[in-house]
Image 1 (cartoon, rainbow, N blue to C red):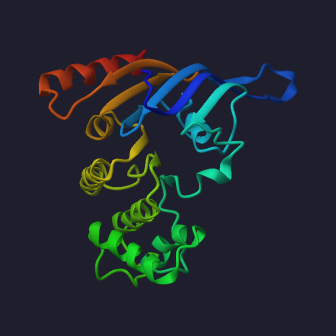
Image 2: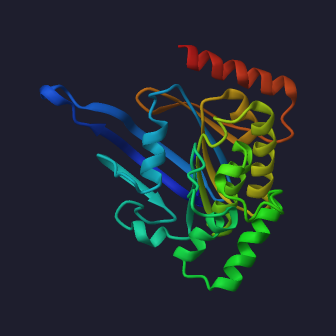
Image 3: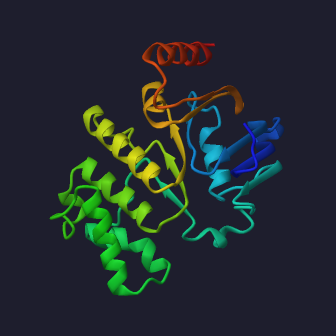
Length: 252
């Protein structure tokens, strides 16, 4: 999918890694074209080793492609990394909270890096903790919080910076299914209500169907096997057909 409103664009992107012993380079991503439009929630799905994390890292500016171009909001995220401070936020698979900071202190971290004054910083952090159901736990340290609560703090930290783009690396995969489902629903609601763009890596077909308004399934090396738009009103019968299509691709 391409469009004039694309905020993330990968054009002809290949990423390879050198192998020891004179072996041919390992190709993780092969001539990939992928565009994500403003306000879209993209679920990126595929088997382990299909290149999802490599794509994620290139969009986040943590590595650059071997060839092709990656643009985020019209800029090169690797070469202009500092320009994305406060514009792009990441929610990791683990909560990555600082154990010596309270919940509110962890949420404030990104705002401190953006040099927000203390009073509005504390107010913003508290507002997001309240929105994620953590009022009364703002002064708790991570060790005193459940896994789901810690991940809520992580989500609050990402939203508090008001970044337009959210990159999510299987953030609910370590949680029990009931907790994960509740957090997925809350995450989708917050993304839509706040007009964010999200790229969500997942290993689960069910999660992809719950999260995405667009599903991209990758085959190895990372190339698009299936690209499916999905609306909230998509009938259950159609969703089941999409599930079967994805299963067939992943089984091949």
